[in-house]
Image 1 (cartoon, helix red, strand yellow):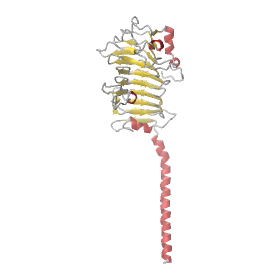
Image 2 (cartoon, helix red, strand yellow):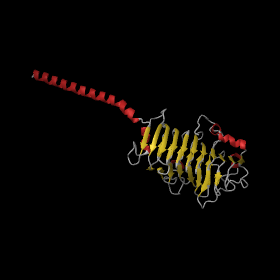
Image 3 (tube, helix red, strand yellow):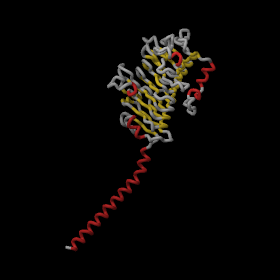
Image 4 (cartoon, one colour):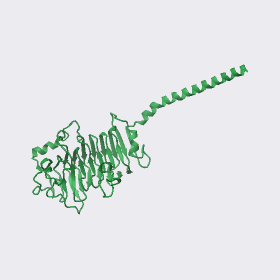
Length: 336
């Protein structure tokens, strides 16, 4: 009986040793595999393809493949396709270029508007950008909601955001530049809408853009803080409209110190002779900072302009050619 017990104990000890050896091997294999996984997870070039031929099928999924607060550049290539999703580019994503295969056929779209479940304007975005140092090229960002309320296509909160050759499509409130003190640049973009389709407190340069009005209303509604010198700057832009549109204002002040300038832009005949509106508050005429210089086209005549808008001198207009003036709160960013 004792011998049986001894044999049993010896057998159990051997089995336990084998189990421990196998476990140790498995741990070693996992440890060896972990660096490999880390190396393959963080790519410097990511492909998004709706048909499944890329690394990810949606932009939302692709956010998980971008390392947080990296100090190197990552390029996200987005294949042609329609991506119906609400996209948040979170604050920990930086130094990323999102590049569409073609501006007409790489489309990010959604259809929320402010009156769906009383969500309000600021939750209606299709794309919300919280990260910094991000570039968007050859993309269409669209809110195609019915005209039943405000509907934001692009909502920005990050700093140093550059949009090149993009189409920003919507109706009311297409582009919301959402945080004061952030710097944005729109280069050769097409932006359309109905009412206040560019609005918010950020400092933004629009260079060579086409601003297309779809109804009689207002293009801009800046809310520039009083302590920020520059709000919206439109240089060498073209203002167009649907054929039935004939009374559009360049801007109205969402907040009293709204700052907006149009310099050497081509203004279509749809621009109202008055040019600007005080948002039913004469006091805004004393505080808003609206200006023009050297504009051309049928809507550019200053003969009928409101008397509270400033006509810049050549010297004053030249200041807006200097990016250090435009982005003066922190002038180390040179997007052009």
